[in-house]
Image 1 (cartoon, rainbow, N blue to C red):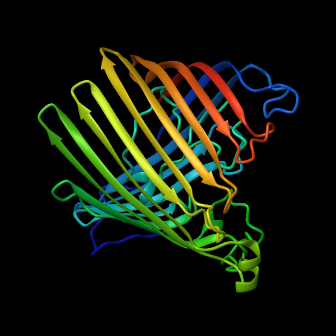
Image 2: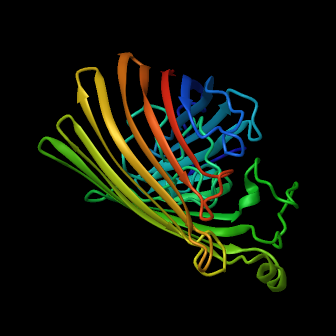
Amino acid sequence: MLLTVNGAQAAEKIKLGLGGYFAAVAVAGSQSDGVGQSAANTRNHGFARESEIFFRGETTLDNGISFGVDMQLEGETSADQIDESYIYVQGTFGRVVYGQDDPASDSMYYGSPAPIEGVGLVSPDFVSSVLANGVASPAVKSNISGDADKITYFTPRMSGFQFGLSYTPDTCGAVAAACASDAVGLESQIDTGQQSEAFEGAVNYVRAFKGGEIALYAGMATANVEGTAAAVAAAGAEDQDQWGVGFTLVYGDITFGADYREDNQGTSAANTDRTDYSVGVNYVVGDWTVGMAYAHGEAEAGAGLGKDETDGYQVGAYYALGPGITLTGGMTYWDVDDNLSAAAVENEAKEFVIGTVLEF
């Protein structure tokens, strides 16, 4: 494909470079594993890993406009073997991204720090305990479309402020999306209950001050439910809306942050909304970082039916052994409640983890 901008030519075409990470952890712990309980017959120790290889490249035209590409290959067999894949153009006008990537409401997020590098409490990469209620793990970023094909625009940062907006025609545009009509070409617009035509935007503000930095975030996401009116009503679905706020404060060796998100979950029944929030603090001591965090998620089960709740508590530390080499470890406690107090759903779990994160 030939790209030209006012006849300006690039000094050379894009060359790809390699990058990525490999995270490996060993986990041991205990949870509610009696007869009839959620973790019955579950092993009390194990290993886990997660890795990706990045293929990235960029070139700059003589007029200062840059074009680039980013493709991320999963290191394990996955439904979406290429996790994210997109191209971009950027200059004094801002940045435009096209392809499979998270929306602006996700990528512009600021909030609570993670005490255990590569693990954390909100949407963690590694969860060894059974979180079987309607919440699972807390999630604080506004994100409906995931990595579905989209176009995103980010403004230049002006006086500390930056704005971003994404549009996703169809969430079946993600390779791993479970959609009945997912196929080559234009997608169906009557996949009952699926959320599409999503607009997801955010604004953040970053300001340095003597001894530190403050970052503020606000994001929203809205999408239209698919299906005929009768089918949507029968499924109890509606247009999905999310909004969230957060902040990260760095002062000296201390990083403190918190966040909050509301989600109507795209369900039309009364009292079925979801709320998530988290708070955390990290402290740097030489090459060590120690911290603690708390996260909460709750999902209403319907009028008069109570709610499911998940609470997570975490303390941990990580050590910068060398460039791109981090040793990490800590303890996580999960308290999982079911609106009906079902033993097959509820869980009290302790996880002890030690691991390594290599970045390259």
